Structures are given as C-alpha cells and as structure tokens.
Length: 446
Image (tube, rainbow, N blue to C red; front, side, top):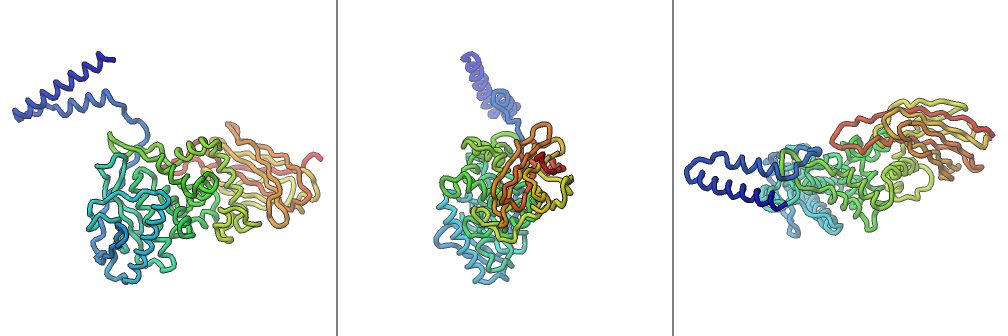
C-alpha cells in the first residue's frame, strides 16, 4: 500500500520538523505523545495475558564475607557467622552446577551490572532473606525479556544437602533470568528436576515424595513444595521425549521465552504448558496421553519390579496411596476428595473379591466441566503389570465404561482415574477445575 506508506513517512517527517522547532523554542507541543499515538495505530498490540515483572529486591548487605571463583564468574557471599569451610563447599557446588549446566546447553544468567561487587552470578548464604531466587530488575539492554537475578540459601543448610540445595538455588536464579515471565512454580519444578539430573536429588526438599503422597494434586501449579513436586512430571517428559539427555525441557524453556516491548507487565503466553503441548504434539504424541501414562506409571513406585527410569529415581517409600479398596461386588465408590487438573486417584480390588469371575464391568461417572481418563491395570502376585485397558478420554459427557476380561494370572485390579481438565492449566492462576467422580464395578455377563 504505497499511498499509506508515503503518508506515514510524510507524517513522521512533519513530526520530526515540529519536534526540532518546538525544542528550539522550548515548547515540546506534545510531539512525543503524537508520535506514540501514531505508532500505536500502525503497530500490532499484544492482547494476550500478562504477568507482572519480578519485584526488585535489595541485596542482603549483612552477607559481608566473600569468596570469588578463580574458574568462573561466580561469587559466594555469607553472613559473618558462616564458616569458611561452608563457603568453600558452597562455591565448589556452585562451580559444578554452572559447569554441568553449561555442558547441557543452558545459558548463564544475564550480567547483574556489578550489583554484587562484580559481574559474577551471586549466591548469598544469609538469614536476611528467605531461601529463593530474587530479581534486581529487568535488563533493558536484552532483546528478549531478561532479568538480573541472585540466589539466597539458608546458611544452616545441612552439609549433606549443600550440593543439591546450591544447585537448586543457582538453577532457580538462572531460570528467572532467562524467562522472568514464567511462574515461580515452573522455576521450582524445573530446578528440582535439573538438580536430580545433576546430583541425584530432587531439589532441596522432599516435595516429590509429598507429591506422590497426595496424587490428587495438579502438576506444577498446585504441586507440593510450591511447585517443586512437578519435577516428577518433567522427569517423565524428559525420559519420553529426549533425543539427547535434558534437551527437551531446555528447548521448551527456550520456546516459551519472548520479548515484551509495549505496555506494562510481561507477555504471559506462550508459557511452559503451551510450549510443552506444542512440542509434544509436533513429535506425533499427545499431551493427555502423556498425563495418563504417568498417572499409571507412578503407581509402581515402591511396588513391583522397577523397570522405568522415573520409577527407579524415587525412593520405594514414595508410594501413591490407595484411594479405596473394594471389598464386594457390585459396589459403588464416591471419591472422598476432588481431583485437581491432571491429579489422579487409585482404586484397587483383589482377586478374592471377584471370586473366579472371568469378566468385570466398570463405569466412571465424573463431574461435568472436565475431561476424564479411566484405565484398568491387571497386576500379578508381585504387582507387575499383566495387561491394561483404557477408555477413550471423555468429552462433554463425563462418563466412561470398561469391559475387563480377567487374565488367569491376575491377582489385583487397579483402576486409575485422572482429571484431564478442559484446558491447559495456568501455573499463574489458582486451581479452578477441581472435580469429583464415582466409580461402579460389577461382575460381567459371563
């Protein structure tokens, strides 16, 4: 459209001349406002969700002891009460974390402009702030949204946990730096997963074990440990979709990264959930199939032969609990608590209860407003899977049916019910898709 373009050029020249004249006369005449209005009329305007920028936090001045790394741009600051031995151990862990994440292709946090006394990434062993990743503010010179960050760790962290806790703290600061728009729960989940990849521990807490103990929770947004329990979900995705170890999660973080150049706050979409869904579906897989598979897989932690890397990664005590044990047929079970998005429940029935019947029938009736997954897994005497049947994911009518032909070796039948939500979760928003269900089980017709 040359006419439009030529007119815009003329307007821009007119504004430039007006601005020069106005500045020479000491009268701006609102030229800046006029230019901004024209730009807003001729540029695309972001209408998607926004998230607030991380609030800048003053660095803890009480952490007066300092050790700088001779090998990398890393500094450990500490309260006067912290021993040199602890500071050196923290620095060794920090150097190892930085080197190993560099080798995995993760970028370094953006420079903080000497706010910690130099261009280094700073870790503070201090009681002045709660352990977390903090922002100094947005980096205006970066092309993509980036933030200057630092990490704080409790100086009383046990020595045995120092490697894992330093790794998690550094990783959270790194993730805030490379995508300050992402939810804190995603940072904690990813940091816990990366810490497991690097140290063999899921972060600096027992959040993954608590996530197992409360399987009704959603992944990430409502996960235990303010999101850290979602590390199990990322471990599963990594194992399922990696061509090179750790690449899938790293790449979806890159896919979710973006640039906000107008308005207030930061662009909130794509987030990690939408990036993961896109990457999974581009591989020919389906996100909801992944959710359903992990719902079944996590049952085997502490039960049966550990044949999966995600199962073997967890301590045998981290079992998901049995929601209900069926003692008679026919029977009707109402869930004692609702499931959050992607949360699951586990109902079991032993062979003595069906007493030689060769077929069972099961009906799921879920509450409206979400989709449901309904699977039945036949287990042998050692709790190993014999066979599995799953109903198609429900649609607007939240009912499902399973006809189950019992194998002669089956000693226990496991029903796994999962809330598939009706949309991707939003880790920035409270859980709004909690739903309950009922399960009916009876003998078959033969």
